[in-house]
Image: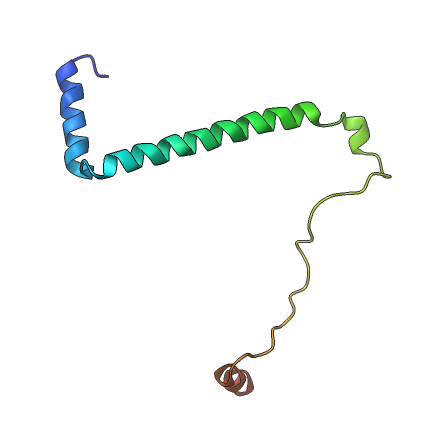
Length: 91
């Protein structure tokens, strides 16, 4: 794509003009931080697979399940202000 070095210089100049020289270091820093986080998450996923027990142990009914309740019924919050109480009575 960038066979000609002049084309690369022109693209770099356009990037500097569009984003400004002040924003480029911050953008590069945030991209680098994101890449480090992504790499560490991928590495952790690989080690999780290695530590995970075999599928024969996954179906063991004596092992407790882990997780959180997602279908918990919502409790209605009491009105906190006079305005909320008035809105509730008028509805």
